[in-house]
Image (cartoon, rainbow, N blue to C red):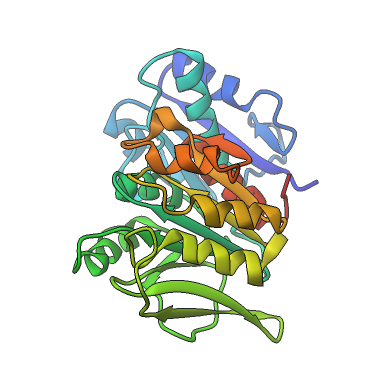
Length: 302
């Protein structure tokens, strides 16, 4: 078992308790409390004032994980707005993604797995939440986001500065590589094909599926046929039922199939249809989906 050693500096006792409660029971995370010889892999800074972070960021030997009012380049984890179970669990999941990425970032990842994501209305913000904290070692991620024509390149410009992974629009025939988020282009279907032990991506014109090109169904169907249990499919917020049938097929071929939990959706139609058709094995919040992708990329499945 690989253990991440973290140190914690909190602005208040209440924030310290919030972080400690979130880490309770996590066997893969060890807390360094200043014992002789303890060398943390990362420093967690939890605070509400920018001054707190400015005075302490230089204390970290390696990675800094910011909780609360940290600077933008630290991608701070928001504090829970409420102290109910749902808000605390969302905070816990987000913190775990950050911490576990410290270990994942030091690994040499293989190119044997693919994650496909389909989204429509409300997708850009949800995708940001899911993707921005995934480490560079994460397996290749293929994204179909329904846009009005001409907006896909702007989405890349918006998303790229926020992510540790490379973000690019897919090029027809290119080999899929870990650490890259591939965005489907307007009017072109994104699919994957296995060849000689590697996955190659195709971006090609075709008729609309469920009223869309690119279509999440087309992406998931290709993952089912070409990757099977080496693929994960995710249906996010959106109008209509694109992705529902393809996700079901992927699940039938042994892939991991996930839908966004309805209450966290701007428009829940797409995830709801994925569940209704029997495609989604799990319904998760965006923060939980991020952690699931990280687990899947590291070799976990069920």
